[in-house]
Image (cartoon, rainbow, N blue to C red):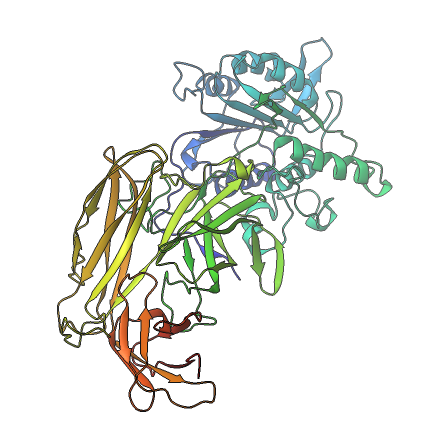
Length: 639
């Protein structure tokens, strides 16, 4: 199964949480410009950084290609402008960052290390104008945000490692990666491509990656000589995202252990360095990362992914529904099959700022009707994506969604059911209160209650073998704490005006007590077949929606014939046959004629159970469909 597109309703985060500053001091090679563009695309397309939050400073610009449109660019940037750009992120600055903001800094091309103990520096404007590690540290210490990551790719960049980490504010976590020690030159074309590929999680392996790390640099080694060209994922946690530490480990392994000691690459002498500020969350060591996933299961088709969801009917998720058309071609959307292993579809989108290799989904189906209660254990499955005929570890990229099918058995006596689903990444998936669904991005539910009602044939109210024109449904209510529940009936669908009646609209329940609302859905006689619409009811407690049902109502007229025979195959006349829909308390009856046939109709389409009155044999299931000859045979006991 291929990727399904993310719903058009879902938006990418627009809050200024992720920022980047990319700096090239002496831009005397075209590859520096091309690298800046590739890093911009990587941060924007892979990690979701808004283009407006990516600031680029290009020194001594020689008219190479322009930067990516939409970014904040300073051409012919000076040392003073670099210092001002960093100062802008501090309190009171033009781009002041707060407690929830993240900053990524990339310094590139030329650098050095003075013998006079001033240490490593960046070349600015020319090879004699210097911006020292101590200058950077002063500015870093004044930026009070959630996280700062520095990647220094210039020569002698190792001298920036300790000053950067030591300068971080007490409440700011951070990490630094240097392309070489403080006494080594670097091959920027190689280090840039390696680090970009590590942050991307894999080298180019499919078309989705072509615009990110294919040709990161315009000069230097060709693609096939880059170590790790065929390497797969680097999320070794797995935590759901590629941390800066994991990216460094990937680079170090391939760059040092496999290339540094290889005579073929004798010209590569640098040794990458890494340091991370110790940081703990929930008593666990935390790895710094460039972005984070934000998984979305829509509460309704209009759900944008913002929290809390503003959906009026948050129990009809378009991302969670059964699909049984493989074995029951006539079933419609959100229609489940009693006493059958149903196939369920779960779609998850990622509106976050990082891809995720670690997506877990929990699915539970609940049947509410004659017996109620949960159906089977919750299912936990590692998410997968299917590309052509191959199945690979999932990589849920920002802006993409994928699907998954599962089969769960549902018993035969449920008149109403609902699917509860949740998607997690990098967390303890069982720690969430899944079954108290709230308007939250990673949780959703979908009611399984397609209400098919006949309307084209007038029915006399005295008929006992027809349920046409009216659907009866019950909504169970249980409260562990006690309280008053109110039933709120929504506005009728203009496509299909119906009446929804309830004898009782309020329930006052004590702690642990159960109750139910009983609904009657009515269509006018002679309403033509083929019309369909939706109608919703909500359950309110303390002015908040705590549950409800959205009925997908279809008008279609059906009928059925039940053939009764004895154990010798002979027709049985004058036998009373009962027909029951699991969601309707009414029992329809008909007496067999001389040929042993009991005729029922007109009927609301759906799944029914037929049996002979007074007998102990289990009822026989029949799927009654409009426009078809719906017939079954049942055997009468004792003859």
